[in-house]
Image (cartoon, rainbow, N blue to C red; front, top):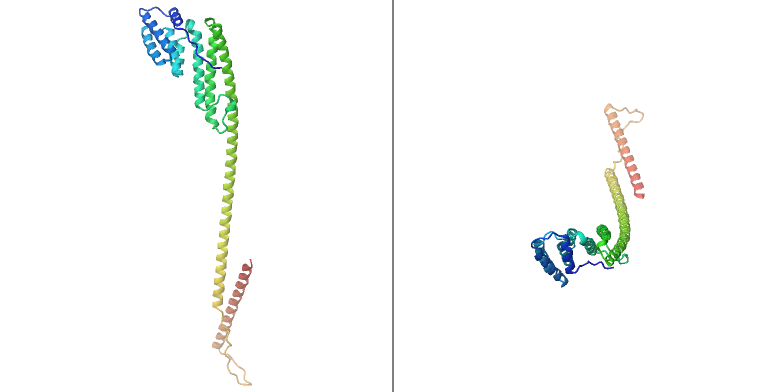
Length: 311
């Protein structure tokens, strides 16, 4: 259902305004300007209507018909917020029903324009699959607030329906039904968008956990490689030290011990060593023992190097 403004004939608006406004010396000029403004609106010229009605307000201040006519003109310009403010000023006497009703129409138009700007479709089936849920949910929440206020204006119009025709009261009821359906559709779309938002957040969390696990695995692999590299360097260092010790040992092969000089003895005569000869023999013996220990160390080093190389 398309919700439309209620527009009164020029003569009816002027007649109603006379009943609800005090008579002033220049109200004739004001009424003439109102008629001209209504004629401009009927011809589709809201700009001229606004200029005329602003003059009428100077000549005839406080008349509800002026506020109502100016609100209609602003609505036709697309200035829904400005129209709503003027309808508030026109809620008096026999124009109250139409002021409530048309204010509801302006609120409905304002809500739909904002929803359309946010990409919210008219039907849940038209909800895009690749849309960011967050901004659209916010737009739906704002739209629901505006439509709730809109519905209250139609309900207020029905309270004042003694000043409306039967067809006008029926239109108010139909408008309320249309708004209820629209609000139900918006709530359905909001639930779908919230579900998508939750799924997206869950997916992002899972991807974040996977990335964290991957980083931890890479860190562990890096530490393992570093440990292996360090172990290799230590092995090379040990091997180098062993080879150096081996080369040093091989380069310092001990000389074969020379036989101690013996004093020629005369047969049948017992040889007797002098103290100097005894000291020399002891020194030679100590040297032989040192060389034997050095050979033993070299053999052990060679055995240890062979075992390590088998690994």
